[in-house]
Image (cartoon, rainbow, N blue to C red):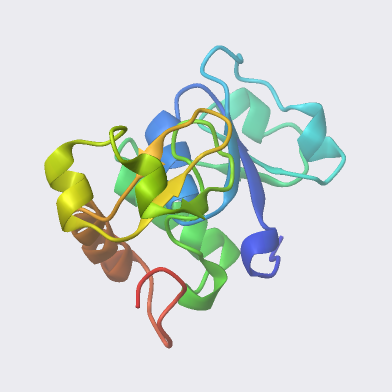
Length: 166
């Protein structure tokens, strides 16, 4: 089931919302629909996405393709399970390149374009901002980014510095 780097695409069932968020933080295209029942989506049978499930009856079906059965209750252990199952390496990730809310790729936006849209102290103390064109959220580097990077470094063995962790 190994794939190369950021070509990995996921769909997470309703019980795996925090895992979906962390996969997005790592830069992976991850669909998460909290109201989808525990069944394998068509996308996985056609090989377009890897289905992440905690539902045993889905995991043991013989016709399940591109599926990872998640055993842990803890989001970071769940993330470790995915990383280990797919042998994800540091160079495979592009941290903070997707919106954690809607999964869209984010883009850099000019500092002057966010004035009045972010708190004044944030605008005055930051030079780089990103935005999601779908939900219009604005992102900037804060202490939560540093904390997330530390978590990621503990989860993945780094041979080189991945994009976003420089």
